[in-house]
Length: 417
Image: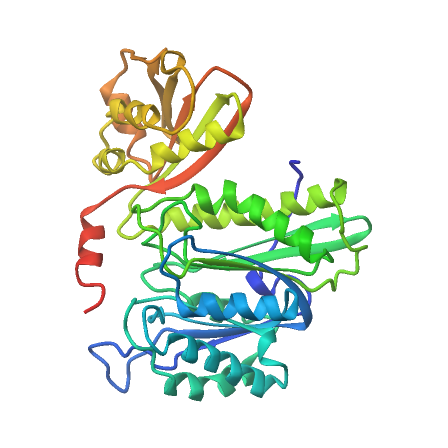
């Protein structure tokens, strides 16, 4: 269902009843640290005024960060209810013998300050894998975070979860469920170690819509497949990937408990937020200079369209060609050809587009004459669209990626040190 939404500010604080805060605690001190250094936030907290129905999806990597283990356990104990989320950057708390203990300690600290059961706190971490997480800076930071909680401090939280991200990532919409005005807002982090398989590391979404746990989880699990799972930066699936979706019901709409028009409206609004966050994540890929958006049209089913679009944005050879502004369309068709889907390659057409124009480069599975000069002009843009037409049906899907640059290697060559 495609609806018109009102885009609003506020990120995770856009919906009613959510407070946030963020601060710098010193989990990782910069090498050139001086008393005058202005540090970026590295830990945040956000809360709901009332216990919120909570759904989550997690990385499919066999190696899972300790925070994911603790979060999943807490949500199982509470039947999917949460009040607070604490998250840190710069240290993933993964592959550490004391990782679960430290993640649980973070929850205990927040619960003690807020006066709530520790199971109503969930935890997330992102950053370097395999380094012991120092708990002392977090112990000092939690009282500061709780004291600083405010309904308009979404920016402090959004910047606290950034690692190699160059910009904060927030998006929110307002929509109607019956006579009630509802809002959904979110924040995300992710720049590298991103690949379809529940990718993009940390993503937090809040809503004041009243919806049952089963329907909330169903909506999140469905929409993640056509948004975050259609995103690739570098082919690596993180150990700490997690999306958390909280619904506190303060919009006072009649609770959504089954499929129907109101559920479809909610899903559409959720998709609007998650798709826009996905695009932001792709555009801010490590070292990236260009966003790549591939849409596959004319497929027999959504699954086929999704596989083809993902195959294109995941091609490292194509990523390099886009960086070099080379209309090497053969790399597009090659990626289409090895997609795990059934279609007739001899029916495939391909077009490349940007705000500077568009060209057809392939028709019925074969190249066509085009102007290299026009192609070069199109590829100067920082947002490149690739349209693949299978010409076998009416379904479509979109995937998001970015170019592969020299800076990607530089960033990851000394990421830990």
